[in-house]
Amino acid sequence: MTTKVTILGTGIMGSGMARRLLDRGVSVTVWNRNAARAAPLAAAGATIASTPGEAAARADIVVAMLADDDASRGVWLGESGAFATMRAGAIAVECSTLTHGWIATLATEAATRGIGLIDAPVTGSRAQAAAGELRFLVGGDAATVDGARPVLALLGVETIHLGPSGSGAMLKLLNNFLCGVQVAALAEAVAAIERSGLDPDAAFRVIRTGAPGSPLVNAVGDRMMRRAYEPHFLVPLMAKDLDYAARAMKELGVDSLMAAPARSRFQTAAGQGHDGDDIAAIVEPLR
Image (cartoon, rainbow, N blue to C red):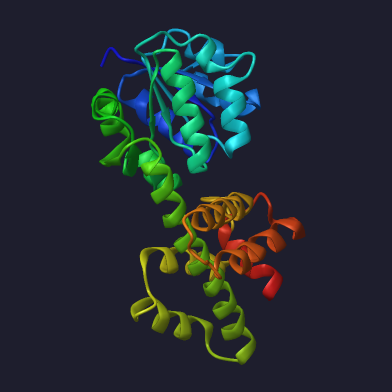
């Protein structure tokens, strides 16, 4: 593939995506706010840039995987942002979990510069990013989506075009809302099992093989039971996603009663020293 790709943000997801592309022989430039986090990718063949603008200057496709709206705004539109150097006709792929409103603003900014933009948040985590098994939830015009498909196909197993700009962002928030509520409920159940005197292994086996079981419940529940908190999905990022999801539902006129209490579980855990841990760690304040 001759396409030049830039990855902005080399955290848990971005670094896995960059390595996946490098392993497939793609020319990759990376940038990260904390340069030390990007440095290991140089040994794998990536070019390390000092600013988003420098990273994006010669790219055909620029992929961002960032924490929130504010980080996205700075990386794309800041003084040394990617939009300042991207050529007309290049494609911006915003994979971060962001608000629908910010995606609308970003799409307008891209269009005024002749840059294509799709919102393409993903389902999957560390393992799926490394293995190229992500699913992309995509919003944007069909031509721009098609232009990005060859690169997305190297990173994932499915690119789902959901509709116009913002469609991917909306579904990702609702998806993560459901995930966050399930994990919060699971933490309460695990803590209750442990306090009740039940055999934890036997009890969790019933849960994981019964109606409540799911890939999410089974994986996160296993990490809760083992107290294994190497991050797959950081606690404060789920708190942020639940906040964004609650806002989205309010704008749609949906009276959500579940997002706020679930979010409080993640905020509590983050405030008690688990801000660098996996979402499974929200069980700890309950133990």
